[in-house]
Image 1 (cartoon, chains in turn green, cyan):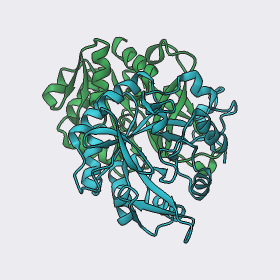
Image 2 (cartoon, rainbow over the protein chains, first blue to last red):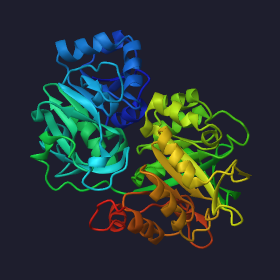
Image 3 (tube, rainbow over the protein chains, first blue to last red):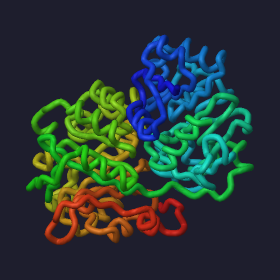
Image 4 (cartoon, helix red, strand yellow):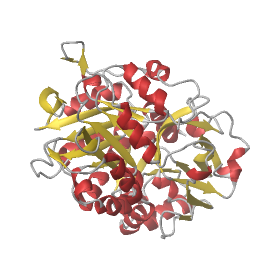
Length: 204
Length: 275
């Protein structure tokens, strides 16, 4: 069963509601014990990097989360700040990230953009999947998703980039490495494309 | 170009779209719609409205509790929690938000963005403190603006448009940006509920002053009004109350929203952001 890590950050209920409507069993994990049985994990996130990291560190679930993902190899999907936490560090804070993918989180440099861009990157934008299977199955050549962020995930190895979005220049809006997935956008707030992506994560 | 590695396989990806956003006003737990910030008319139940807007796949939604600040009430956390759980689109909540703790609480209920208005104007440092905790992207500053012919052309008002502040919206927009706001909502009291079009002059003044995402509210009476706003500003938020809750000249309550092709038709072919 999918477990959503409930460390007091991110829209757990919206994700749960979507899975309920899809008749896909899902539960929230609020303790290490609840998380340890997870077969798949969703790590949601909103807010700032350090705020989210602090809450995860204080939740008592971090060690089990690392064990479930790295030792047991269970698939994990990080959403928004949950994706950024998978990186090693962020320009937005001073705390260490989980470091599951060799990457850092950087602030968009709107002054260097190819056209006028505002920060944060807020609203509906296209994601061009690099792979039409897995997360982007049945989503089409481009998916339309909701973004709300000023920092982006910059991986060292371009092979992990799974989806690309243009905001004054291209950035990695989806990454995938082994059992680890991350999306910068909010699938739980992206209507049909988001529902399909969450369904794909559940069935793959 | 943000990251050299992605350049090689980035094809013809299009640009960020304008946001078309219903704005719902809550009073005594029910939805209302006002004219020039007065004459609240009951239009329905907030959760029910959100359910209908879900089906219509709206871009995002703003819910403002217009009682909370005036009556010095705490935000209605039970209502906010239900709204956040029900919304399949991003939610911005405002009303009665005065402290960083309240902002944190609202974000932890699953709301994407928190709007602050009178408290931000009375205590601008709140913008910086709240952004530090929950991130800039989640802090929205709402400015309710009225034309004041005798003095500066525009002034920010608070408490449902009853109290002048002496603040100029253009100057305050710059302050809000410097302090770390993530979005500005410019609400024209003069245009509210009249459905005769946005105050484009006001929008232009604020747009030119900052580099933040901006949403314009007050006056939209048809999709043409939204198209005119997008034509001028490109990627922008076009919010409306009456347009999406009333139908026809008798203002019958009927929740409505453009479908995907109607929405796409509002955006010029070249989706580049217009300066």
